[in-house]
Image (cartoon, rainbow, N blue to C red):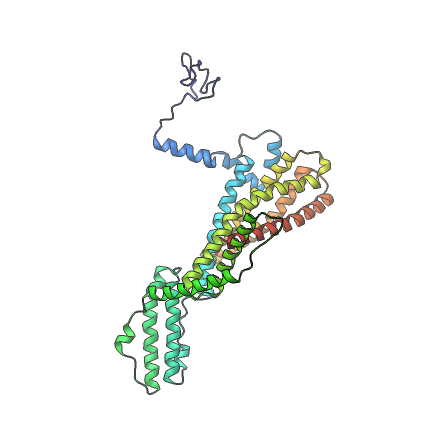
Length: 401
């Protein structure tokens, strides 16, 4: 049972006005003290920043399963029980891009370790060598691959431990092949020797990379657009230099650690610019709705709310698709049936995203199916190209990070 609290006789500590409730009617200051236990401060901080409370239970299920429901509720004035559109879109945007970043890092590491192996141990060339010189050349090639893999800085600890073991195995096979060819075997000390220390190799690679960077800066053409200020042209020129340096490092650097660092730098840069890019596109999407539904006599703010809820749903769909895909990939080696089931769930989610957006547009603007389908296709086509241009610009800015 809720107890009534009397504020009779209490005065505001700020302006001295008699209190009639928890907040002063003169200056708005709360009667509650700011001196609270630490756990209360943490709770209030999370509430203020993310506004995650019981309203999330009333917001996310309808957003995912009831197309247009939240928007119509907002238009009808029933807003207190739901998370505000911008806050909802903002949180889901950050979460989806964070998970997408993790997914890309996971795929990148798998490609680096399996698709294009950083640790490439292949003794076939040693076993098929026809003379001692070819044996030594094949052995050196394999040892160079192992050395580059160790210097990459992207391998997990269990693979790093196997590098010296693999090097010893390669030397033993090379020694046996030399004996088969009638040559002297490799000394035992040489077989058991660890790989060369990384700093010398890294310094050699770093010197070559510095030479490449200087050559790039000498060969790059400065950006000069006549109608732009000099400071903007200088900024674009510097971005072009960094973009070309990153790209050349990824493609041509002899240092695996430099390649991995440049690759990660570009990925981080792209994901750093994506949220700002989406915030620019949302008002543009609202403008497209205003243009195609100009005769529906709706305010631009109404179209903006539709755009916010539409993007919040797309970010939620992207988040669920990524999580389902990552979980499916992780489960397949252990429980194949669960992995394939999640694969079907992922496919259904992908199909549900455009279907839900279409139903949402039909329910909110209340037009017939032929006109709704036509406008949905036209808006989608225009927005696709705007999104492609925006993502291209974001990718360029990220590559220049």
